[in-house]
Amino acid sequence: MKKPFVTRIIPFLKARFAPRGARISFSQYGEDLIMKDMLTKKGMKEFSYIDIGAHNPIFGNNTYLLCKNGGRGVLVEPNGELCALIRKKRGRDICLNAGAGKTDGEADFYSFAQSTRSTFSKEQADEHQKQTGQIPKIEKKKIVSLDLIIRTHFAEKEVSLVSIDAEGLDVEIISGFSFQKRPHLFCVESAEGDSRVDTLMIEKGYKKVAQIFQNAIFVDAQ
Picture 1 (tube, rainbow, N blue to C red):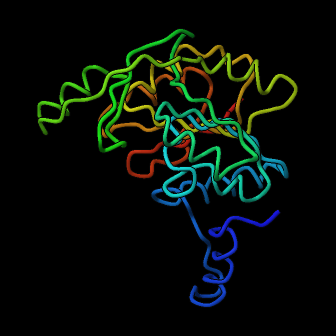
Picture 2: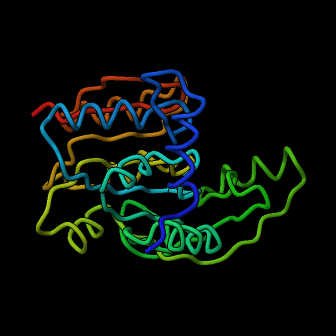
């Protein structure tokens, strides 16, 4: 099967224009390179991941580098158009057209024309509407818990990485997780000055190893 264009062109561009030793990142600020190195140093050769709030399948994505290096995982994306794009571009992965939460169920999804502003948080949706005058499209979406994703898709295998970018609901998703199966790494969006994610992850036995702008990386310390 012919490889996607982006997969074919990147090696050429790197060889042609990048300085020797340069490495390509698909995350916003190179988080994926840090996490891949950490997992590799743990001796992992097969990567698995859960990407909550995946958005674009390639660009600005925390798991595409692992996918490109043979990994497989589950991506959770409530935007139907983006989920379809993920399924088209990342056939190795499973994409759930849903949101993630503390418990399984359903919730209102506030969808804006600027897809990065779409959210399940009414508070954030109201604030964005107040600032921009944009009126969101509201639709019911399925909500899945992290435990359900793991029971369904990772019953017989470990989880290398969980990436969470849930527009203000990150703490809720983590607080509902049983941690019966412990992913090696978490990458969680954490707003500056908000220590709730740090406190919760420390309580669950994880150590913060990096803060890259709004994203915090935690490693299992147990």
